[in-house]
Length: 282
Length: 282
Image (cartoon, rainbow over all chains, first blue to last red; front, side, top):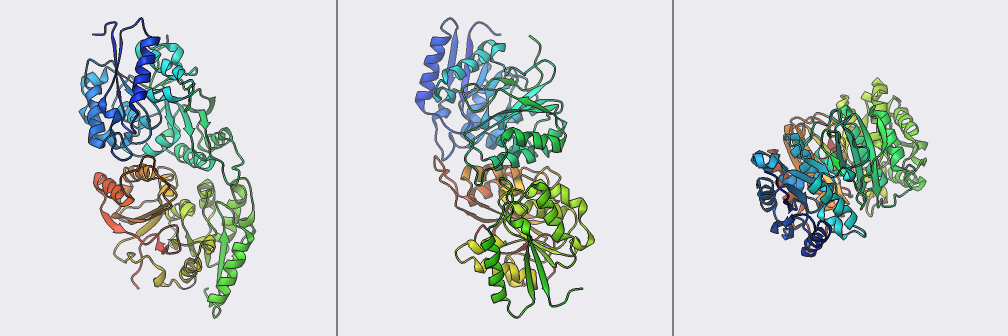
């Protein structure tokens, strides 16, 4: 079914993007992958506005299914995070077709809610990694190039360097994972190397989220945790007195989950791709 | 065992208070309850500093047990919230004595982590309500007077007006409850009227927390939810487009938990007292 042509559909299950983000991504892809037949289709839903969201819950669920269930698309790429994917996850899961199960999915941050639900539903083409919005970061072309290298070629250079065939993996933003634990979206992460990153959260909140995450019986069945980057941490008042790695070591110690070291993921242009589930050796 | 004398011990399981908070509370209590033999003892731990916390985890756990397990104290009053109670809860619960079970406890916000754990451990004298730090609010004497009326006299005037003998009740800060769900601190709230309040959280976070809270199978066994005040909500970018009550109605609808209306609780001087568990009719 797959020929040389690769067709990527972009949807925004949380917040909207501006039209120029789509223009920049398409122009960059045409330039970078000029020798390939790559089509990047931004669903019009990406540019809708309904209060906080890129269209209301129905708009966003429908757009997600438009791409996921269309067998002409090889991949569904998340436009951006923001917030809102958790609101549509339970609606879209029962409506996924076989075409949806033969597709690659890539996103992070708020998109983790949907990746989790899709993983729980048994999909195998899921990965945590850069999104279209990353083109707006300084040097963001590197992140977009990595995302496309994964979506177009499954380029192993795009992978987080600790991803291995030895253990299944998963990666999440801490807040996103924390807020799906105990809900219908929580996936089984038994035996997984779990990579966690965060952005723009106070140290006391990082500490509290890690209490919550590592205190969860399901998470305690993980093979271990790797700590991604925690960036743009607002000043704690008073100074928290511990770094994010000290806090992670503390909660891994309390919970008995092995702490495995750092992970090369975060809300930045160096964010690497982490597949959900087992990775076959190259 | 109880005579006319009432002895209240104050501890700070999260963040520290300044010495003048203790002075102001004691002076106010002496003036307001001049006809009663009331002693308010601020454990020296309240004024410790260890990074973010009022002393390290051991200091705070020991101080909590000093008051809880001392039969000469009739009540343990939380000095303030901030953050940190969840870090000591699992340490103190196995060390509670019989004296700890014959005591009143009062606090809210971060203190909810410990109230939850104590409630799960079967204690019956627990309530959500004003703390010593509330003296620093404009007009905060009203909140402190209400707290003392509850702790000294179990004054029913201090109670949240929807508290009734018909249903057990519980009250929490949304973030505090969200972050203990699925951990060893999560209490059984089956059949309870659950009152929730929030402060200083963006609307998208309130929405996400209510997704998480109402998506929890334990919370879905509650008799219903009442919405307390959500104050100092930072501006959402873009405007969220829904009020906190619309969001609460949405998630109650999705989850099938009855929405019961508003509750007279919040991070303010009008914060009323909500007992954990059944309330005997007056």
